[in-house]
Length: 198
Image (tube, rainbow, N blue to C red):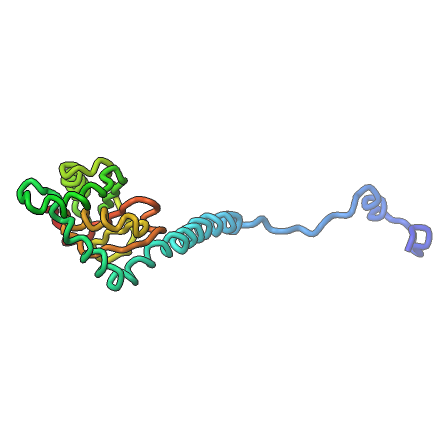
């Protein structure tokens, strides 16, 4: 209905209302808690989702090696028996048999000793033993993954089996596992509770 069609005479209220513009519905202001709620949800969910994603991605690497550790370690340790005595100076009659495997060992290979035992300095002490035996590329670092549960030596492939066996014999580690994803070209030793430096 237009103003011309309005059937009643104009009064004082009509003249006051003519100058005004239409007003919106009044809304009560939001409380501070209601304003902050979306930010709190984002701050809590984002780190939680990031933590879950990192655990899911990194947890798969550490779970593979221990499952096959029992079956794959028997053969490398038996091959290592002739090489656990690289000092052929004591027995000159066996020089020919002991020198050939010792000459084939690559003492420059990187050997990573990862301390997951909870004993401070255990990896560094183990590295000293390796360096004293001639393993030039021995390094120490910390390890925080839950797997493997026992002290384990990982090596990359069959070409490193003799070096892995020699290092295992030196340190008294019998759990040797060939696993290229865990070793990535090197020898990786994960120390767990109960391991003692020889």
